[in-house]
Length: 423
Ligand SMILES: *Cc1c(COP(=O)(O)O)cnc(C)c1O
Image (cartoon, rainbow, N blue to C red):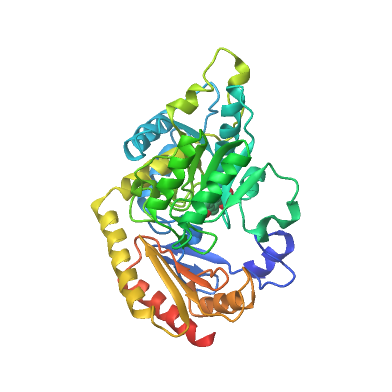
């Protein structure tokens, strides 16, 4: 039996209705932007395996760093202990993060990074003896699948079974072009009518919503409104972090600075699950006390796993090379050229580009649903043509590993253009 059939017997896949969906493709090998399945069919990974892999599959530089760490100190508990990879990673991150970020807390994935940020926002006010229990989030936000992260997420597809079981969240419109004032006034209203502890947002690009983009100036204004009203701001950079927007962090486009940041996905170059939540000293100080009850009683068994830290350090080093920065700029230029070429196509309603992220919306009669017929037809077409793209409703986006070659990128563009003919 092949892997695909053996998989079926015991395995439950994420975001999958097993009764109706096709069997998964068994991938045996990856190198650079390419993957090969068990029948040796080749695929271009045009979404960096869910946005985690900027430097290519089976990257030797990161693999060597991981091997070295595994054979020196693979893991040690982080309660009461520390180690060099964690300390050096913290120091290196401080050189790249916005200057107000002064403390880092480790966890395992994007959802836990968000979970930590939301818990910290709530306990921050608890520790100060203030009752603030509401979180503000954007419409169609995605912050992960654990409970607080789900509460903050606004895509009903993911959360409808759990409505009524969440912490209090007020939702405001995203300040996309033309909606800026509506977004600002909704935020002011939310703060006036609720005891808001924090505002969580995906800075500049809402990934899971279909690469919805908005301007730094609008986010600056929203952060200013929060600052004036003593509401903590949480930038969820799980998707946008580590170069995707053209700068190391999307927050680098801002004049204002968030109080907390959530990092994961590309943090370890797509190798080992790890996440980090970062904080200002003012936040840390609200937990720093002789009273043990003011401490943050949150942790995970594999917190700050040394091997994960070593992978993150190697990834950060790769990201900062001139070669990788050049790749990011190159892909951005190619995207802009393709945008110019495709934007007037009769089946395209709108296109957008930021950094290595490209998205186009396909004209549809009715609103396309998240995992609807159009989406499935497109997905199957891309797979048939050896390109991994996961459209969101009627949005087709490309988020390639930075090392993708011009030729591979050209093939992705061609397949996207051809897909417009089948819809
Ligand atoms: C993917 C994602 C998450 C969740 O991360 P997981 O590692 O899947 O738990 C949270 N926030 C954003 C913005 C994401 O894109």
